[in-house]
Image (cartoon, rainbow, N blue to C red; front, side, top):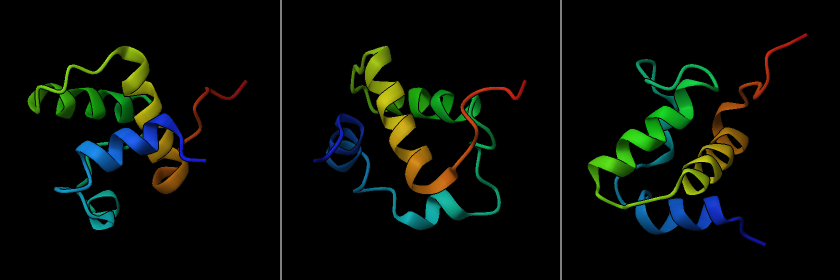
Length: 75
């Protein structure tokens, strides 16, 4: 089953973002903290009106698919 994050990303983001955008050398999302911040920034720029939960779901989806950042600090 597709997650809500996957559905939101597939519906609103995939048209402009190919997989290569997540692999580029100059990516802005460089850790878990910056990943949801970038999702939030782009959804605001696109006037999508996502909730905090929507932003978190998309960030979690992207993290699972591309980034694999630890979502918690070690310790």
